[in-house]
Image (cartoon, rainbow, N blue to C red; front, side, top):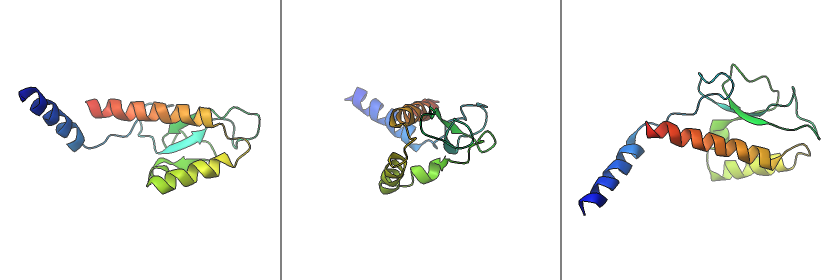
Length: 112
């Protein structure tokens, strides 16, 4: 019983800590606030997307998504995925890989 209480206490402590957003994948110093395809000024069909999470300073893309808009609520996230899926240049696998990296960095930041 003591073990279970300790585990719950650790979980509650983690949950009560303020969330720290992952750092930009380019400069690795500023907080990431944008999801953007790293494929030239504007994405086009046949060009790899190479999605990254970036700070405002490192973003050079004309097409980007504010992370706060993407995660505003479930409907907003769903709307963004639908919107992106309608683009002939969008690579869902590359976007998903970027989301997994972002989630991993988010969870790692919460560990400290």
